[in-house]
Image (tube, rainbow, N blue to C red; front, side):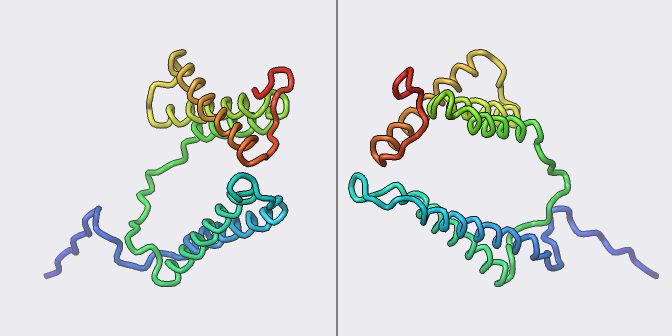
Length: 182
């Protein structure tokens, strides 16, 4: 008499080893981005600004952080991989409309920043990215009130960032000459 084996529960942890090559690629990618950022930071002036912090401080902080994270990911892979990570469900899919909204915001920011200035182009980037992210989570996004809130929020974020970079760190950012610091 033969008995049929019972299938494992759907939420049970996978019994076999998980492939490590995707995890290795992520670790190497993060490490390479960190090294590239460090190489780029060497070309930024180190003249001290306020409190001895110069314009190259944040790029170096970011580079070191990425290098540490990349090395940590590679160490995790070498010591057994991401052990607590379950198998992908297969149901996850890319959210193409959100990707398009965020990409449009970034590309428009890069293409119009020299014409309309840092504050307005970053506000545009913020508004478009938030619209895409709102739509991807099913939140209300198309109402004029929501657009207005996003616009004001974008201005309230980008104006202090502009001031901090131009006044505190002495980094020149694109601005409109006709409207002053805007």
